[in-house]
Length: 374
Image 1 (cartoon, helix red, strand yellow):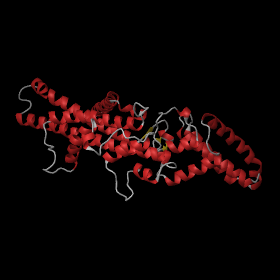
Image 2: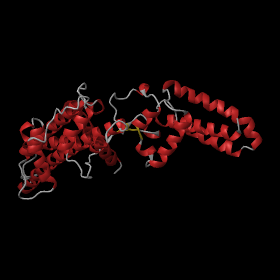
Image 3: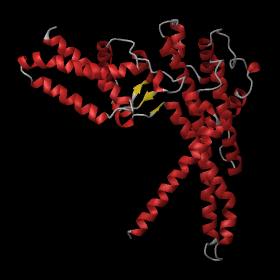
Image 4: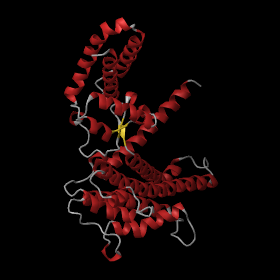
């Protein structure tokens, strides 16, 4: 074997090792990265004679290291093809070590069974690399967290509003003036209404993102077997370049994804629209539109805190129902997207409250620490 060919094979193995060490928590990434850099530097400094004698030894080492990874995650392509593809991926994507690598790309190159992730992982789900190893994320999950965060804060503010009278009564008379009381209660009411409005906006955005994601995932995984029309629709467009609205996406995506191609959700015929879609589009889409670009001819957004919190609570649960119904219509054998906790209200509500309590704890620790140093 020529020295150049042997060097190319070693380089491919090093790229493969770097890839595996980037996302596997069982690997010390810093040590792995240092080894790769040191090996590259050493080879570049070798004379022709040294390369001839030392490259076989280095190749044996990197082959052995790679074999351990291949045993756990059998490759679907050659090491050379994976290395070339990974180099191209790094060039074409923005800073993958900050934003991760697509699960689908990894799955195309190796068997990820032993990674033990969700069974319904979307193609474009990002797997964390380097310092982010062991973590991952996808846009609809971020938006779902945003929505529950807004809802939990709306609830928190509403509880404070209900308790405000008791709190004021326990404070020494004359400590807070009527003007201050009015201002305080007005600000709390504002928070209830603001976070409730954000809840509705955020859950609507989540549904839009979730539906888009389901469509793109099916497109990415089946692009070679789809018709041109199906490909365009799953990317949210029509032949003339117009964008589909949310109703059209929900109705069309499920018919493309389902094996029987029969629509289970019909939204184009008003007489056939059923719950939860009826309320979602007839009531809350109008409220969402009014909040985004209000005009006097649209739904009123000047509501009492009691009304706003109730609308936020109802839309939260309604949105999860819409997402779940759409998922089940697309995947009849599944009881919900596993990668989103099957859109379980109790699960996500608890997680959002835990996050809020964690932030409050951090705030208390910071205040206590600052007060000790004053």
